[in-house]
Length: 252
Image 1: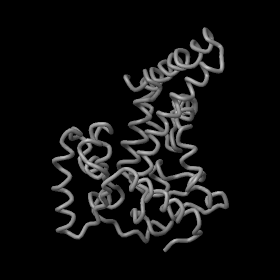
Image 2: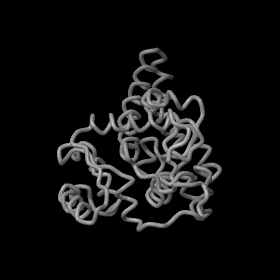
Image 3: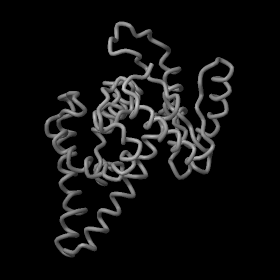
């Protein structure tokens, strides 16, 4: 429950990230990281007028992510439902523990500081902490699977037309790796997103050793391996990807 102590939820993380995102990466409707109406991450998401501005407003919304996590997840845990998917009733006790931890976190992070030091300065400190954390996590989550040429697993809403590909190939072609070992130290290895998706149970300290092996294997077998030397390059590519999807109602 370490994650619950700092305002997250180990249960919802397993449901959202492990069971849904890792299993169905970049599958519109199944991958919660690209499914939604506010931001059009995938060509199969219905285009709406506000999407034309998404390449700009996405980056403004990312710092607000912790507020959504801290409060919206209370309902998810109580209802045992997350991202429109019902969670197993066997996790009910874990959800109750998570709810208890969440209320303790809200008390010690929001309520107690504001109670003892009721000022705009206290509120600004809380919001700054949230914004920095949200921007850091949000940017790294978004750029990992949304970049120029990122594979959309489904080409049509009609899933009967989908020709299934090897799961590992899809993990490579829907992800990107950026930087090297130094960035990996600060990112906990998540900059090696391709390697992380292929080998999620291997410690991230080994990803820098796996990266050249995986990259060469992909080259030899004509599997697209997306690599960016620097973080700014990856961010720019993500911006272009968002801009393309935001200004094209239909993409072949």
